[in-house]
Image (cartoon, rainbow over all chains, first blue to last red; front, top):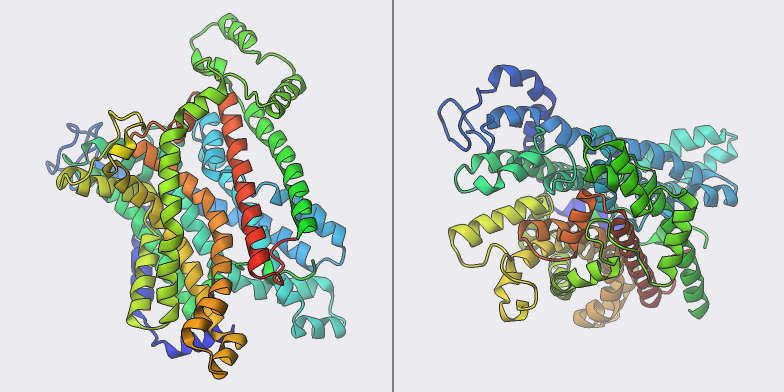
Length: 291
Length: 315
């Protein structure tokens, strides 16, 4: 850690990436949240396929639908499913990891973590696609699948971070003062885990957005007519040279979101003095105590 | 080392067994099956039941699982519901193109990320470090399919420098036309190299600030020796473990790349199988990939065990 802090101190503080990151992140998030409300007013009438202009600021797609309207309505599923899934993964995995790290019973730790770790080698995109196809692209089913795929890694990460906090002098002192386990776990260990967890969550949301978008792009997610950024990109790609905006606009939304998230997370990590090493999760399981 | 290896192998075998049950459950318990898909909703119930019986889908779940698991152990993966061919044939027939893609990527991924990560990490805080870190950060945020489409549009269609699709090739004349590989492999490399280079950079920075390196420098050991002999193995450690984990990213990348470039490979077979609910193919492929991921993780842990025996790379 000392290495990271001296490095951060030596480096001049850069505010541009942070501001730029938030700006990039803000646009797609605002569109995802408020777009569906504005869509009815701003959506142009259906027109000929792949026209530019003619009352359509962003043109039309292959089915003659207004791209601006698709853009406004397509963010909720593109970003919402992934974000919700990672949140759920953190609720489940975080709980498992915290309990596993702070319990005194070795068997409980095994019972909690072993079954989850079995899931780690599953190919996530395929599993998510299978669930999506069987449930006909239901966003809820996809979100559940994404979160289940993420739970093992989250549980491992939280456990590793919590272990070092639970062994720290602070936790020891609280224990000696007779604080309850619940208070030590929730009040100190849980909070000590937060920075590492937040950094990882940023990464994980990016990956989840990619995975969901990839499934949609491959036609293995939502219906091919659904207003979703990735679905729109996939559906309009044969018109790429005729009407590039139908592909570029939704693709730009996705890229702005993920690049913005990466930049903001990175800037935030620098400010809090966490190195990129922590950001990517505890690298080796070297953090683990006890063989 | 031998005991450690044996224990890990035993664990991996058990894990694979559990995964087999899970994969079977996932694909068997989900609503709708191949018979229902083939006949849509219009078909009479009689037709569906008939096809179900023909495909063996009406037998009890346990019996089907026993059948499948038995087949797995003897190397018989069943027959594809869509084409009626043996699954083994379906998979091996498409393996060539995918193997070339994956092979080219794997050969390039380690040197590239080591060079980038080391270059940035050794010159921490300099302009080079910041440039590499910035590129890595941005590239890391571009989805595979967006990158693939952008490269196709620019180099394939606008400039016409490189072929934009594999349509017309059957994967056998690849070695004669290496230009076909450039764009797909670039897409596959982009995110993986980013992820690994970040890890290697962080590992290098941490290693260079570690007590033993500082002490070695103080004792007058040349910087080059310190870096290559002492810092590098420790810096590579997180990279090696990350490599095993990037397998999942890489697989996602292969699916996208094969779809965008119309590569007649295994990923295309997988996509078709999921779309057509070809359960035997899906089950086998998911399990095979999980086995590969397990093996990769095991190899990474063993390598870490060698590189830094004291770190508890694994339980």
